[in-house]
Image 1 (cartoon, helix red, strand yellow):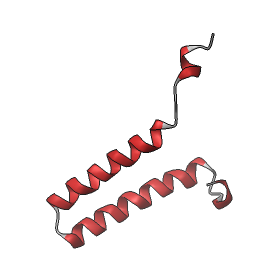
Image 2 (tube, rainbow, N blue to C red; image 1 turned 45 degrees about the horizontal axis):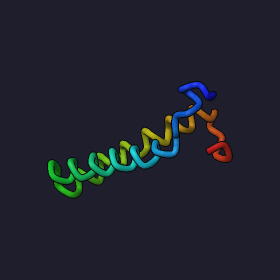
Image 3 (cartoon, helix red, strand yellow; image 1 turned 180 degrees about the vertical axis):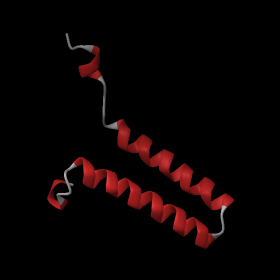
Image 4 (cartoon, one colour; image 1 turned 45 degrees about the vertical axis):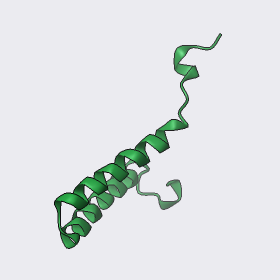
Length: 63
């Protein structure tokens, strides 16, 4: 019998992350004008990419 941690299905995580990020962008679209929304989302994307580069020691091939 498998352990409980081995039975967890990780395939749902990308779907859940997509739903969360889509709802965040829609919420921001309701709160901010288009130019401000573009600036805020670009900062968020750059922050996430910077975390990815730091995690993989700056190697573009690792991502």
